[in-house]
Image (cartoon, rainbow, N blue to C red; front, side, top):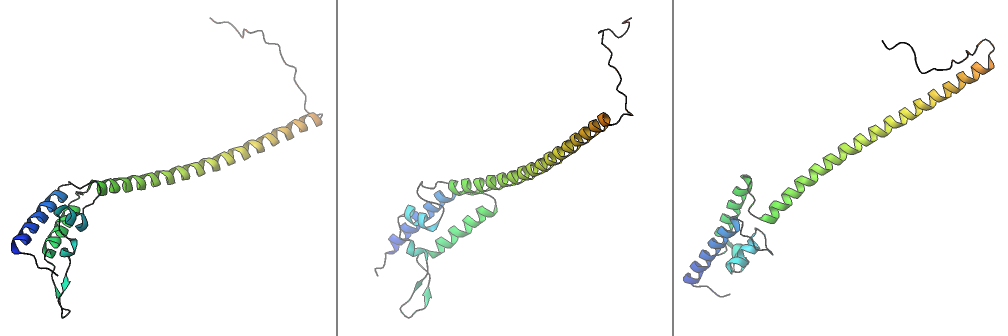
Amino acid sequence: MTRISAETRARNEQAIRAATERLLSGDVPPDGSTDLKTLARMAGVPRTGFYPKKNRDGTPRPGPYQHLAEEFDRRLETLHQAGAIPDPKAAQIERLKEANTALKKRLELREAELAELQEFKQLALSRITAQHLEIERLREQTTASPKVTTLPRRESTGVMGSCS
């Protein structure tokens, strides 16, 4: 494993800080997102430098840029808590999730309304059928019973009285 010079390390840290500012301001490359992988790629450093290492004796030691990764994560979390999403793709995903939830609620309401209308339709049809059967029964009863007298119909002259 090769050691990097202090000058190279300082230059890399400066590149990481500049890339951090670009990412957190929303300047995310089309093929990336707001994460350490994209940060490393934008800064031109290996992303393994963001993670802890182990000494030869097995004891952990921080990676050369681990403090910058932690700072990046803290700032990103602060932005998320403030309601700002610097990654346009992540913001779009959040908007689509919210729209999807709203559409699901609307669909549930429409399905409930449709079920209610179908129930009402069935009730109305059964009542109409019952009324029709009652009318037929009464007609049969009137034609079969001699006690009911049918009144003659009057011819309508069109005029029902004076208009003055």
